[in-house]
Length: 396
Image (cartoon, rainbow, N blue to C red; front, side, top):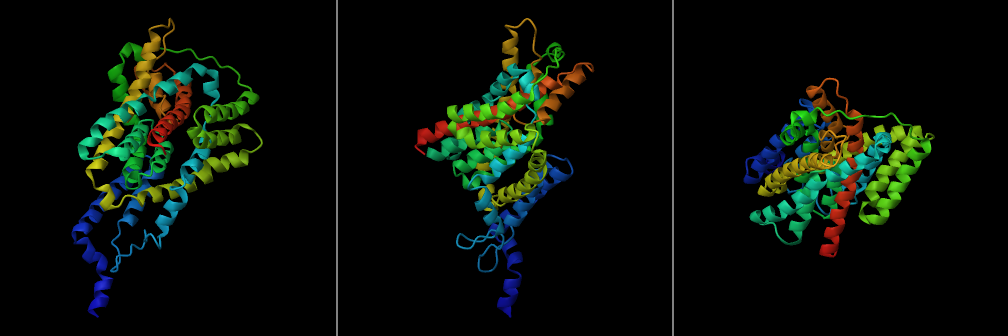
């Protein structure tokens, strides 16, 4: 009878142990993520599944040590099955990019090809933060190959590109760091309206923020829209082979959108596919947020450096626009540079809102959208370049 009662109340007994305290802390952290998702609407599609997945992952084990949700190496639980099926083989990020591609409209970019440069410039934070992380992470004992891999993954957070960040972290097999890296990436994506305005205002003057930009409504042929994703896939695949899976899936989704004969598939990619994969992705990432792995000084470092990366990316785009203006008679509103990150279309909307606050009649949304969609491409290419360089350096 005593053994039966002990087994029944094993979970309660565990919570009062040293290991159980970590579980309780993770319950609090998971609850904060769920609160931010529901109450503040910060990236709810992912933060809510991640938060709930973290709760499941931190449930006390049974009396024999078997974790009912995560299972064991020999007998994985359902969350572990999802993780192995969609994260370990990079399937979920690839499927997410098909949905994102089906949502992206590259028409404004084709009308303003010069905006492609802002999508590239805004990736400065990836490489700057990579170098900063190489200097800072050794202070907490991260060394060797792990140092380089972790620094690269943290740098990619700055692009505000969650799937690419997740892809990199998984490619480098950063197992126990997947949780904090992914939470940082998607948290900062959701905080674009809070983080970007102070950075932009610090680097620009009121007069610069009020600069008007001409926009000419030019026709883009259907043929150009169809050829664009094909050309981008071929060029990126040849120049940066590591980007082929991500660029390819993104451009395939876009081709579904623009071809005009597969609207049902494009709608499925935008809605059903993206929604289902997002749920599974969130739960899978949440399963990595166990107290033992998440409650470390490294997690705080990842969150802090992730914010630095995000600020660097935003600043890189703005400063590039200011540099270009030194040589142009017709000035560019430097706020457009901040839209070169990958958070589409949130960043473009933030920039338009800032422009309206300075001048209610100033309309820069189309230019911001152009920079924003180019940032979607730029983040994948820049992240893939870094992954490729690290892979060659480490002989992977």
